[in-house]
Length: 56
Image 1 (tube, one colour):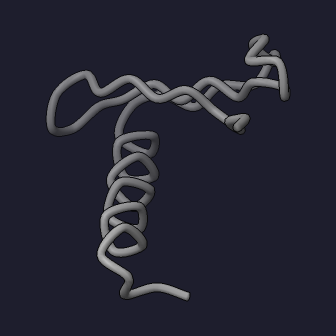
Image 2: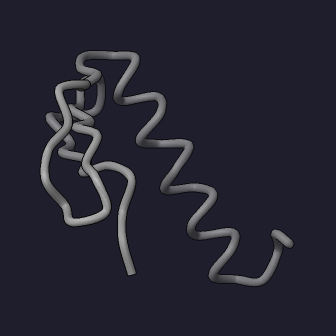
Image 3: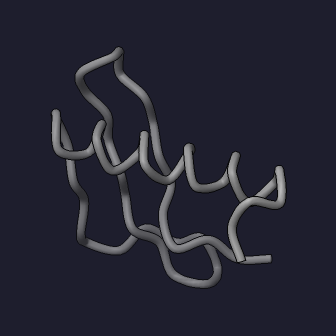
């Protein structure tokens, strides 16, 4: 299994998302602040729906 990014929550209104390659090595692209918090929240909600079988 490989990941496209690593996420770190920094409270309810901030996060850090670091893109990574298939070997989990950081890429020079990151998103931070409120925008990253919104993206992280959506990813978590999608993963939860997927685990519950509500998303194809």
